[in-house]
Image (tube, rainbow, N blue to C red; front, side):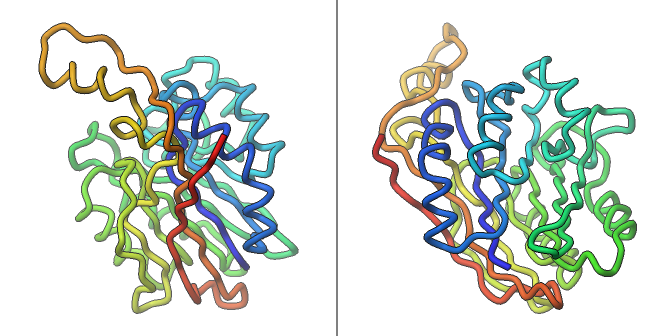
Length: 260
């Protein structure tokens, strides 16, 4: 099974790039399943129901998220009824939505788990314990298991990779918007990458207008940053998985320049 996992899609530039290119990427790489982080789709903050529907219709199979998922209040009823849009599984009990999706792709059962880190982030439930709890609920025949950990600290994501090694097919990170160059297959057969990188405009600062961000660092008078435009790229990882064992065969970084 070939999987494409796409990093944080930021605002209109990232969204349009995905909408324009997703079918080409699926065909070019013979992709069976696409997982995309939807954390920053709507102007850089969360996602709206109409945008989610548009992305699903275009060829995204499952969406993960992170700390900005509830910035748009209209997403709450949507995430409660659409199990393919995930929020971090270690949010407190009673949080709308789910952190785990289980489905079928080409007759093969697949699980996607969304976690969020705690280092340099808001205090939340233990992602390590929550991952253990949810993986224990999966039937043994759900061998293809994908994890998106939305976290700031490299050490926390690497620790999760080793913690889940041999129990999941892939453990990749999101949130920093900077693609790392440490893709590898861990000893137990888990594909690992610290951060998938950002899908959006690289003409600014992690997808946002550079003047707005510089003002935040240099003055006491600043406004909420608008998204940047230009130099748009789609970033993520291509993962080849042995569906009979759930072990990853190969992982490679993807960085595709998009000309609008």
